[in-house]
Image (tube, rainbow over all chains, first blue to last red; front, side, top):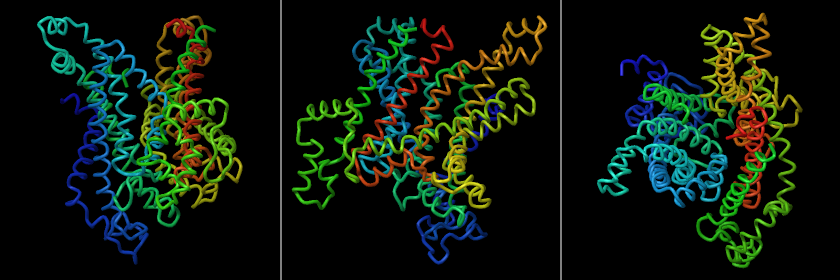
Length: 274
Length: 307
């Protein structure tokens, strides 16, 4: 652990990530104003003592909206990572453990999904399902599970032939038990790294979808959607474009650092898996 | 080599069909009755029937699929609801703008990454290497929807050097969008060139060349760099594909009239044939580029063909 904390990337990543989580959880306490309260007389006002990051096009406090926006980003991020990893782990371990036609079908589906540029598929799905928080989560899960499935399958193939797994099978353990008790614990470390990096990717994708008008809908505060309205006031109220962008950058950078630090800490040879 | 190309080509066929199937099924993912959704909630019954007929939604699913695939294979991607013209025509008009943007970004990335990567590999762990690594870090972490607006504020609004948006000002219009998209790529490439070249420089053939009297500069540029560029070239081809999807966001920031913007406009007007066609064209271009990247890899590194 001490060695880990000396790792600059890991420490910075951990600090940024902890800060992000605290901001999201304690949003009602930290937020100086109601994120939806409008003061139209003071719209587009520049940062000042009263409103540290200024006011937006409807006269809402930008800092409060960024703080509440952290909740949206993390809610989408965690939902996607949890759902995608459950689906990915289940299908990946089935493909790797049972092999045969099941492996072929699952892997061909992952081939197609990997060949399709991820964000494009997400855009396509939200375009037909309609823009909403739940549909963003759904679209990102559909493209997100593939990575976990591939990783788990590869590891399961390796572990499947190990003596202790063969011994467990010989002692009469049934397949689900072998997978859950003997195979999965061995793939947990790379999964943790993948989930951390996946969280960063998901936050970025949610912001991108919301920026394109396909994600979280107003008045819910979302960093990506804040940038969209900010774009209309470039040159008049630059703070609307800069601060939400910086929030996204810090969140993504923190999680990427954390994931990168974890790779070095857990086992540098995982690097080739990501 | 022919066998290698053939094998990779055959692998591409089921994937292409998978993508065709995915794009085809998009319209059936519309919640409720797609015809009602497309015609609009308050549409008259006969309008809904007309839409259903126009899209072939009254046919069995299998017939619809075969119809879709055969038409796409013939180059007919459908008719736009908005303009009532062939969607391929719209795509043909917008495609060059997206390619131009991708090429511009690639050029920016190369101009930045090549010198920076080579210098930091040669002077490893020096201050210049640290600067390059810091740059790479910022480049990878900064999302285009922050970097783009920053460039607009500094170079278009404050200094009027470049236009704020659009594509009407020739090369000047291309600079800021290319910089926006090229930044992340240049960061990735800098890192790759640095690692790859630093690795080659430790190889014995470089030591041998220097021992035989070759100057260090010649050993680096004539011997090591050649080998170091093998992985970089293939990553370039692969990254060109991701530039196409990155363009969707950059085109939106700069109102650049490319495929990405066409896709977003057609999503907002619920012009589904146009949506499907734009997605299909972007996805197919992406696969073709991946295919090209694999072939290139086979050409520059003969060991790959044997795998």
